[in-house]
Image (cartoon, rainbow over all chains, first blue to last red; front, side, top):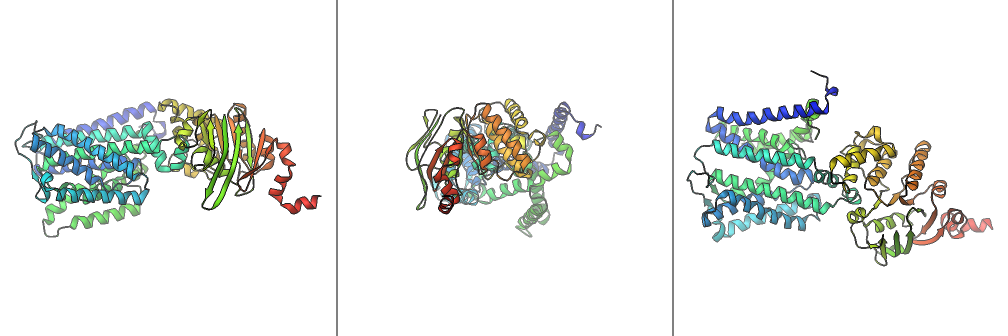
Length: 333
Length: 241
């Protein structure tokens, strides 16, 4: 093998392609080999949470605006598609897009109102927004069914986005994950990505260089909330039951933030790595301990968070790039 | 090209700028001097859109920019640097400059090319893969200029780009600014080093306590009584007489 510094751009593209192809093929074939619902469920959760965390990361990582109200978008996605299905029989595939667009509009308004706030204040304002959405969902019983929640019909069909086996969910989840990774990568390599970077690093300097900081952040917000809502629909279709405490509770936002921060905020793969680390731990603890020590996984989350922030404050993904220079050579981003 | 008419700025009860007017024609190199706290940087902030004036108006190439935001003003071709440099710290020098170039250039490829050219010009090309935060003061000042130049300004406001440089670096910076002036970019320069400002500028404007106390050719300014009073005090004049 050639020394690292001799890797040319052609080699790099070549390697990048090979590594990506191997990863994708592995992800495609692996579920077929597993054939065990317990592990497949784990995969689905990883894909779902990875996608959701990556969606959160588009705003928090690239624009540097940490939102703790992303549970609202998840909830809007879940409730919109489910209500459209239950009331009007609309296929969740379309409901998912409607939910995404609704969430984008809400995100846009939230952005216009809250983007004048900085760092902690923005986080607090979005936190309040998420909480308000939760309270509305609990109390608007005629629409949402309140705390009793909504059950989705279980009739396996593609039209109803409902399947008897777990495999289709695995592949749909994988599709969304790859899509959001692709979008993140494209943002990072585009004008938008450069402008968001400029805003995140220094707002005054960015504006002095002609960066329309308000507009680029709104674009990030719209994308981020759209993708979060899509995952809300995915969750609803997979869990076949939603209530405010499962799709709009504040812990959802905290959890995605945790995944992305531990994995590496502002990186393409960080949020996915975070989900790949945390979900198996959660599942394993639940399986081993059962209900003996409920909440144990939260303690473990806390310990991991502290350790990561102490030893690799930039997140696992960034540390990985430092330790394995080959990765940086292949992916410059 | 730039017409600043009767601008004023208050911070609380303090008037920082009082009815300042200034005209810059294409290709002009204008020096802006004055003691500390005279309002030089505030004037820059008002022109570049970071602060709003309470009175008067500012026009740039016949467009009224008085109420425009900095990013809009920059896209019209009026760019500024910051006295306290503001590099994008956690990214490379070349990416810093690409961001400037992208404002006018839609394609990343062409922006990269433009950034390379500008880096060559300001002498940062060999440090283009260094992170913004690890640059020396002199290089940070160069980076400020490089990023600004990448936006292809027609009027460039330079805020103390020579402060804190050693004699060698200073000579390089003077050469660079001379080069910019020759290339036809109009310049408005804040500077404390008199020798430099007198040599580079076609015209010098002096601010004191937010008021314009003199404007004219460098040689006139150097013997202006008001200017000497502002810098050295009344006693100096009396002692001279």
